[in-house]
Length: 594
Image 1: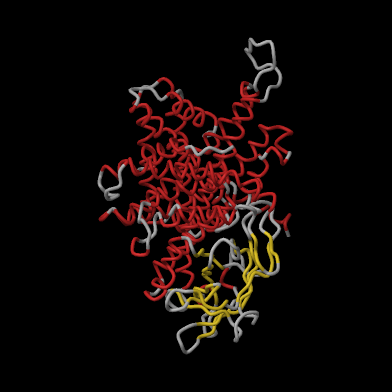
Image 2: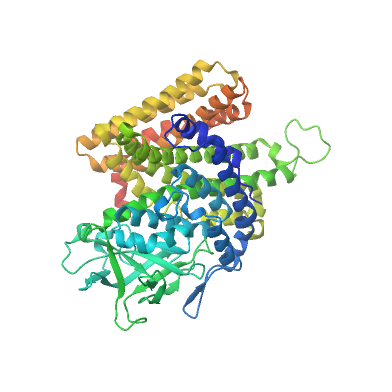
């Protein structure tokens, strides 16, 4: 059974990602360690004792469409109500609407624990939090006053409606349409697919944020508007009115996250109301809806990265526990007369340590991204620097962490052997759930395109260059520490950082020379290269911090850091070669796909 790693999460927040330094500088208001620890402890308790026990029920039963209504798995409705009662939905929301305005770092840490407990359940608050941010940033005062308080409390949930059967990543071709009305409202018509928690029985109302096109809108993405469309219309006094003209047509049958209803939504076909058309209100300005939606999407991308971290943690815990109990064969050097626990076999230890290293690396990357977001709002004159740092880290946090989730969950099955392939063991669910995360909220390939074409050029490339210099300082500190346990860590970090530095320079040159096809051919391996270097450096930063606090101790973190440096970072050289030299062979081999 999953147990929230509260101490590990707190350590990473404070000593690796930057929360401790920010608190000491007064950048997080009166937030102190006692409050941080209390919030994390209670979030961990809720995830361990209330969410995790219902995960398997959600996986087996799934969400069900019955008589036009979506029913959640047994116990999930009460679980959600308990979650609301805990006040978790408003951790980072504006105080004016009942939120606590706490740092984003605390929220993503809590999200990790809830997703480890059940990724399918945690998707509901994840989408609602993103909707809150979009409405609070771009909505009119009237929309905020009518909707935000109930969304912040969690009484009403939120969704994101982008995808259509013919319009996935390319939103410029979406066909959902909106018509103006004289009273300032709009009527929406069309179909949206893959709508997470688009219909359910846990909340009193569901607030849909829907992309649609006005009749006179320009073609492409420049002609998209964003609308707030509630399941139930809301009266001026805040009470619920009649059902709006929208409904869930069907639920998808998915590989994983079975408890999360993935809906096909129909807007404006006349099923409800006296007039066809789902009633909605504009969020932001007409024809500028994609920019508004990106507020929600960027929030969701980091949240999805946390899903990768969460699955990695839960899968690792399960695999380690199994490996300690399962006995097979005689491990090298064993003096026992019986069989050895498989954790004592070198290859199993290698898999488990790889799982641990990837998990802790992905956690640190994601928390560092959240830290940059917090600093972009609180750091005064340095806000632009932190905005760019958050922008640079977001695609890496989303992609590296979700790829890690899949890899770690797969290794977890391997550790279990044949039992891992049996559903009753529970290891398979993690892989099934994890597999969606590299796909939604912008596939990891799209994240790589974003990283290379939009994020590396920030400030003429100086943001990335400065970041690499910071990583080199970590490697230099490892070298200067003279701690024997680090082994070849400094040397391996140096080599990996050189790989990152040279590959970044090559990509920037390719973009400057308008060799976009060459740059994009190497975007995905570059993204992984960056993530691996960050993993090695952040593990080293944590090891140094623990060693300093423990007067030179901290052997566990140092050992894991050394393992990652000497076993995982050699891949960066091959990735560099793929980026720099792989484009020509890719272009030549594409004839096989014609």
